[in-house]
Length: 108
Image (cartoon, rainbow, N blue to C red):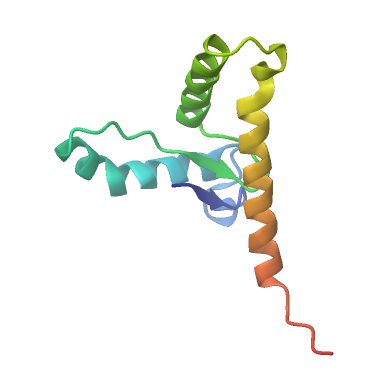
């Protein structure tokens, strides 16, 4: 489950702070899902990013851990950036889909 928010969230309210949107998205995910995960004996790792592709700290830690597991289970040298490049592509694809969905319909 992922959540994308504009990095400009809260710009007018409190002044711009880099990473503010990611921090808010991450906190919102924790508030929404953590209790249910704990009750079901699952670990909850929020995966939040902004529209420019910056990742929340917990997401980065999680992906680095996945990257270590992938690296330890394969002999390929190019694996080092595989996890982050695939996630980056998925984020770009999702953001593009959101932008296209907001375009006005073109009637022919």
